[in-house]
Length: 366
Image (tube, rainbow, N blue to C red; front, side, top):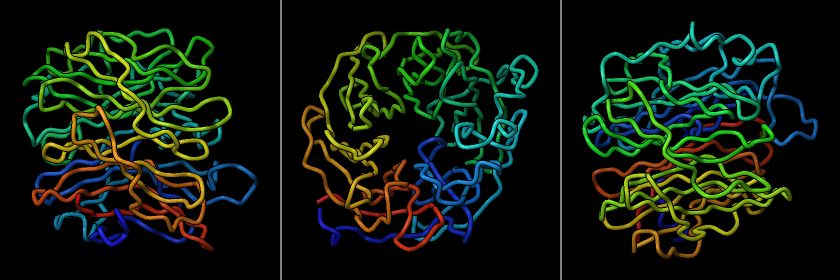
């Protein structure tokens, strides 16, 4: 895919002096051409050699934006859910100790049990998973919206999930039936570093969860940030962001044919995601799978690979854009419009500018 196949790039959120980032940590949902993205907003910091150009002395507050024209234009909205114990949501690793949710959250006090079950087959109902940090023993929770993200309920506890390494949750859910679903989540390794992907299942609409199994063995680096889809044949495919100690990144695939009880390694769709790596975003577009990711080496940008055989094989990387000013970008989420075009939302930077902003690209498969 050349740049000529890209229908349009759009800015979802951009403010001078602000660092807006990491849609993959939060979520993206659509109802036809109505699309909602949740992300975080902090402040740009001074260049000091860190990978992210952030100011750790300010919280990263959640925000959301909505498009009603298939991703062409976006309007900012307030994320009106309660953030427990802090202003920072799912970004403890980017702020000073005093701003971390981990420092003040009391799960038994700040997180509530879900009472009204979630109908996973109800298109109006969505879930957003959240966390404190990514190392040690992080705490996680989730929110529920039953009105297309106009309002949020929660924070709710992952009732029944007690892992020694805690839970570092991002939103990755596979619906199996009305009240039955798989949640693909991450926990820390035995030494407290990130991380390992595991599968949990709920059969009562997210009121309680049961640990199923890990996906793969613990690595020297990490395996985190799953992105999953239920395939047309009923199997579940999960893509995982991987990184070795040398900071080389790639994406691995795992498949389950028994509703998450067991998983088998299913190949390496992307062998290189650039310096420090980047998480996958996965969408089912008709009979094809679309895997979108940020590429953090030169030329910096957003890429995609396509599978026409349920994830058995993938195309060479397709360039969605390669005009990034540095590696601090990516973390996409994707949805498919009614016309079959793909909308990818991610954070980005441009040459000779400091701000980090949320962008969208609309493209079609050829």
